[in-house]
Amino acid sequence: MSTRQTKREATMKYLTPDTNATVRRSSRRAVAPKRLDFSPDMADETVAKKKAKTKKEMPEKKRIKDEDELDQTNDGGLSAYELERLENIKKNQAFLSSINLLQAREDLHQTTRPKPSQRGLRPQSAVKEALPPRKSLRLQNKPAEKLTLPKEPIDSLHPDLARILKKPSGALHMNPINQEGGFKLPPELRQLCSEDSKEEQMKLDLKEYISALKSLKMREDDVVKVVKDRIFSAAFHPCSSSLLLAAGDKWGKIGLWNMGAEWGDDGVLLFEPHSRPVGSMAFSRCHPNQLLSASYDGSLRCMDVEKAVFDDVYDIDDGLKTFAFMSHDCSTLLVGNWFGEVAIVDRRTPGNSHESLHSLNTKAVRCVDVHPLQMQYFVAAESRTVGIYDCRYLKTQSKAVAHLNGHALTITSAYFSPCTGNRVLTSCLDNHIRIYDTSSLTAETPLIKSISHDMQTGRWLSKLSAVWDPKQEDCFVVGSMKRPRRVEVFHESGRLLHSFMDENLGTVLSVTAFHPTRNALLGGNSSGRMHVFHSWNEGQ
Image (cartoon, rainbow, N blue to C red; front, side, top):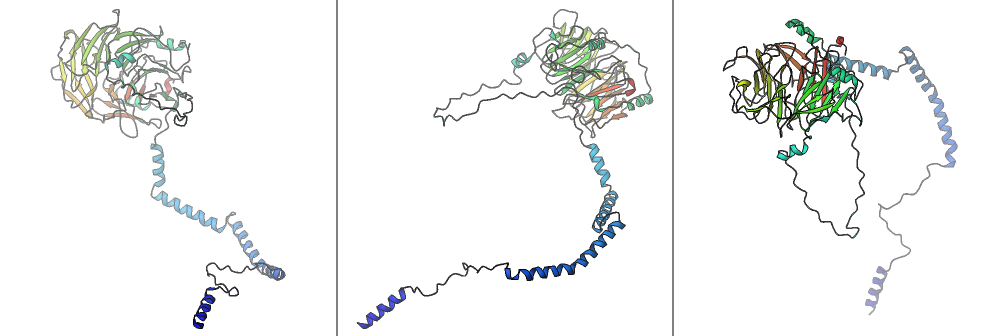
């Protein structure tokens, strides 16, 4: 019994905590006793030590300061560190000069693409419609709306599309769309367009012609946005007192630009007589106040500045591509379309129909041009061949008098030489420009020269086309895909006469043309800008 009692007491003693015993704690949680960093009793002693230390270091600091001042006095106020820095800069500059890195940087800066000219048409800021705030129907405890599928979009090749977008037939007033309502054409424009330049141009030999080309320059003000979209065609007015240009773009707009004029937007007036690309345009040689233009929407119109209207000359459903004058008074036209047909149109006949329509046994007629002397002959750029036809013997299914063979791909243009018609200049997508001898029309026209030239512009640029200089019988101009961007002038022998390059030229000029009387050259790009090279001593 005593043994059990003893064991019970021992167990209770072990389980009962001792209040007087020291409690063990983890060393991680142990807090170190706080110590004062500053003691009032030691303040006087610490201050005395600091003062003594300062007095000992004063002479050394003063000595160092005096030496620095002496170095700055001897070396133009620069410290030793700054002198060493300047020496390193000189060594780096010498190294960069030895490897021509600085010159490479300057060359790269010159070849960078210049900023597009801001002259010409002003960008119109779109007015944003203020829409009501959107609210959740679920949070408003409203049922969801039943949405229906939208109607199928009209196909771009739908036959009714051209009829929907096409301008109404008949005369259209010349109301510039880049000016406010009630704007009247400036009297200076009517006077300028009525000016007829019949000055006889002296023919230059090749050396003088090259010298004249080198005198053509382009300033910053000679780059102007004339139309809103890609340029498909362009032409110079024949007047010689001033430079007046016209350009047609992708959506049927025609822009007139008089260099140096103050009306419109930097001398630019924009009209909208068509609804689809303006594939061809030309000023009338007999009536210089008239500009004729053919569009893919099937309309051929005559802009008459004297009457301030766009007259309706010829009209079909769609598909007009090119035209040329078949008479000296410009009253008869030869019109080609995308369906392989040519129409003869007489402007003196009332209405807007053709006199006759003829098929050339091809899918499309991309370009037509009339012989300058024997106007019964015309050349047509067909799918992969060029044919010369006699309009007196055209039938429903016509045969060519002569063929210009040798083309491997699609032909973009074909033109007779401007003075005699003894040469035909063709441009083909097989990257070749060809010149044929047409002095005597035979079944197989001989090839004189084939010039290799990159014609692959892609889908976003207008096709390159080589065109003759109307003042020179044997020279022509064409745009180029080379970098830096340029415009090239060739002789019929294949010799490159001159390349027009400028710091303001940073895009491909697909559409090019020479002035008929003055020493000037135009080029149009895919953003609607016109570039003009001209002689500054000729006025503008």
